[in-house]
Length: 232
View 1 (cartoon, helix red, strand yellow):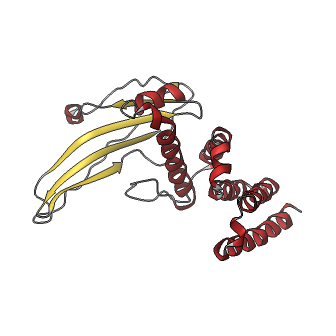
View 2 (view 1 turned 120 degrees about the vertical axis):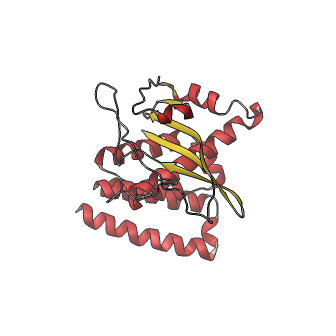
View 3 (view 1 turned 45 degrees about the vertical axis):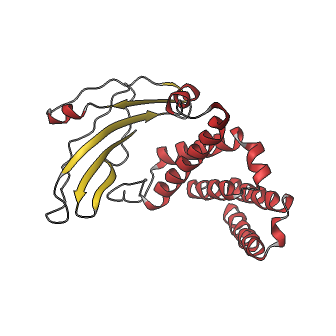
């Protein structure tokens, strides 16, 4: 579950926008589907750095691997002590259709892939740094075990859904990220096998003839050896 507000501050240099995450670390729904977001105070920049701040949008997104739902909260409701909302989940493909309804049909799949890839980068970054997108403060130790499993599944689904495009582009980063996630979970053999796929993809596209890719390949091969030793 992810909740964000869009804040706009007037400054002497013009309006400055900021996206701020407001849910507590590791917030997710319980077995009954309920979740709680505690109140949070946002400090306005002092004059003369800022002279007027407003909240433009408040969104809450709830998602599983296969389903997603989003709710935009009325800004006027922020004055209330408590807000109760109901978010209905739907098939992830239907959710994408709504999210990208403004995109021309011929660009839909490309835009969807780009946004999913961007989401994976945010998840991966959060898992290892504790910082997700525009998070104000980092979450200690990054993702927990439940979130790690979720992020791994999202990477695996991306590889399944865009296998052809990944092979055509020779885009091996997704394999390297997934290998790091497997390693964090302690699945060293899976991590090693995934890195081997990364090398195979580079070789199939002729990328290893370039110096930068030769260095990358050498580093990956060393990492594979380390993982296999851990497996033993």
